[in-house]
Length: 190
Image (cartoon, rainbow, N blue to C red):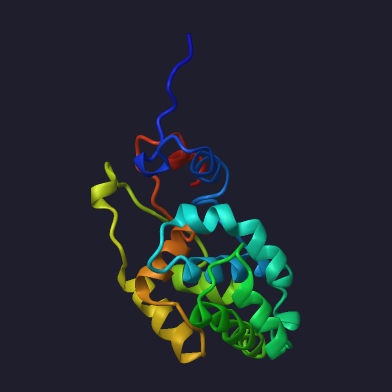
């Protein structure tokens, strides 16, 4: 007889969500390329469900050259048109152009900060904020920290980085531990 594992209720019972919840969401991430990928994927998710983007993530990685900013800033109009025709990603011109703008902003930011990781994590003093939510209803859509991150990213030229998107990003990359306290990952992600 198997025992049911307690998880955050948003993970439901869909395999992509379960795997993402159990292995990635809330785990502190410090790799610049992966952080750049995640800020762009969270932006792509605006107005859509995360499962839509999660299912297309491999297509995004392929379409955007592994989220290599150096390659992305060199995209020609022909490449952008190909992206707009790519059924494997969300074919929204504003969102596609945002990835290109974000690549430029990312590289400019690295002229001031040694790493994107160091820049981002300064907003939480270098360590995850550990929340103690009992239910999903308690989890905010944004906070003062995500407001500050959003404002600073926008000032630096990043697109699709509103406060709600920034908070979802912070949750995803472990800057915030928003697993509910009954979830088996809450303790593991501390």
